[in-house]
Image 1 (cartoon, one colour):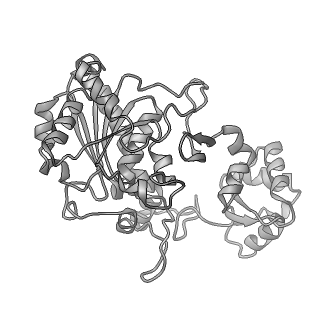
Image 2: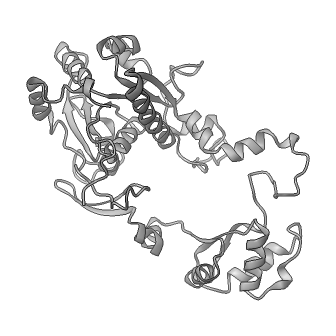
Length: 385
């Protein structure tokens, strides 16, 4: 099997040392784009931080930089600037994951890029976006989450992002807007300048909880769904413990599923109002009476809204459904050796995900790409969609 090739023929130049930009490039590379990662001669920070499997190959690098080629260039030098200029002339997309204003100071701002390649889709991905009062600040994921109220910790406590990760939310939003811009370009011939904020993307990712919190005082009838402080919670929408120490997600909000559940477990006595303080305890004792697999077998038999709730990634990977979908992939990197990664959540035409290129060594493809530029082999921007 070969990797999904929906973006075959699209060339992406990635200038990004951290997660947001690198993840955007990974998403496009997984879809078949030719992603060329431009690194400084020392290599991007993610190569050398966050733990090393072998030198220069952190788990973050191996996960985020698959399906890419690596070239090295000092963009502050005339030679490096000339290389980037040549690459962008032949490119369809530029991912800018640098601190806001970095490429502009090097002569590659939005206006210069529009002159260099009017068909270029230029996407800048940053923590707060390039506009607004905070746009110039250097950012990491915690800052993105904290700005939009997505950190589950009080000041002074160790934080965790209970509603998601800003850099990865930014990458998903960036990839969506990039492919949309490529579609528009196929009709108009014009490129785009896309400015993605990780904080904004994370807020969008939590839009339902946010919408209810922002409009709580406007809800005249709250009887149709329970609306406590953090979303659609209540006895029929929460996590419970099972007999074997796992968790199970119970989401029988709809009356038809609630009645079907009570019938499946032969407990008609549970059919009472959700505001009954004893219902949580009764459901807790019920779920603690069977193992997780037994509950999932019952859910499949009666089509009940139940699902496993894991804490350890080893348990996630071993789950029968996750294993069948094959999103957790065991691979063999030519330098780093065995590596287990997260694949793609979408199957296109039933095609199984695979890696075309493993995460590259620093500058592994510099000579190859320079040879292509010299031969004009990839100067095809005007003929691609």
